[in-house]
Length: 332
Ligand code: NAD
Ligand code: DAU
Image 1: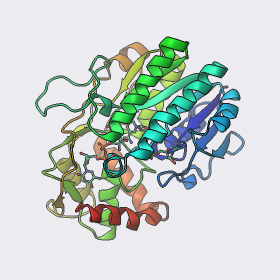
Image 2 (image 1 turned 180 degrees about the horizontal axis):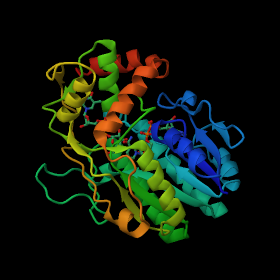
Image 3 (image 1 turned 90 degrees about the vertical axis):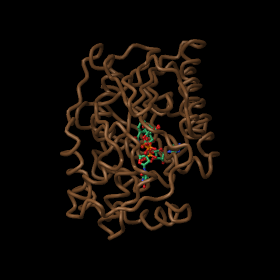
């Protein structure tokens, strides 16, 4: 039994991770979350309160972080500003949370000699051509495109420096695009599902040919737990489940599943600097640590995700209008 300090545990992947940990281990969990627009305590509703406590606060608050880290065995660091479109509009919170917040956690991990797992993204590697036979691996050079991915790349570099210079016991994972329940309606898949539920046509940026490598959030969780248990200190592991699809194909799958015609979507203004393709080679995680995805069937996972959004309108409706107003101001 370990005591995990999970930052960002009220967000999409963090809350799925908390559920996964409570269901599959006997660990005790402290969630530290600032409850920004992206955090939602309802995402943790109904979980075993004897094994979980929630602390409302920022990872950039060094006094609070020092106290919490002193009580923990492992820090699992999900907290971040996570949305590329927001980072193009207002980059500052991305520097404050993703860079300074990670620095504060690293200093506390160093002081208390507490193990840290840093959750990062494949976007640190930039993008690939559509016909590139290579995928991202642990050896791909960093080449981030957006303010979001630049701050995540910076946070990865801080972790590496604290490992090498101060002996902090840390690992890093870089995962591809997640989907599943509890994802904010600003993100591609929930935005389109909830648009269809609301009678709004889905919105594809540009031609819709950009490729993302989809993985179910629960598979991300099992991979992170595997790395915490068996990963080598100081090492990086890429997480992906061979789920490459272009955005147009995903919208067409959503439309078909929701009883709409294949053309019932709009092309809208493209994202500035829009990365063309992400693709992960997760060989190292599979062969060295024996991890395998449990939900590799994207069509089935998407069906379940659509059903979840149909059944949980009370969870997403409060954010929907403001999110669409934000996009409308940008012609998206
Ligand atoms: P999210 O935006 O849904 O959740 C982020 C959470 O962090 C929210 O609960 C928010 O309130 C909290 N938070 C933000 N600033 C904070 C601060 N200063 N202090 C404490 N809490 C704060 O994000 P997500 O999609 O769940 O992503 C979680 C992590 O996984 C991020 O680090 C992201 O870079 C990484 N990641 C995401 C994906 C993806 O597809 N979504 C893929 C790979 C990696
Ligand atoms: O690759 C991992 C990354 O995946 C994570 O690091 C990020 O935190 C996460 O947000 C995600 O980044 P993307 O920018 O790929 O995700 P997003 O859901 O914003 O967009 C997915 C694709 O869909 C992208 O090509 C942009 C496109 N898109 C997005 C929206 C919101 C549309 O075509 N229409 C839309 O309405």
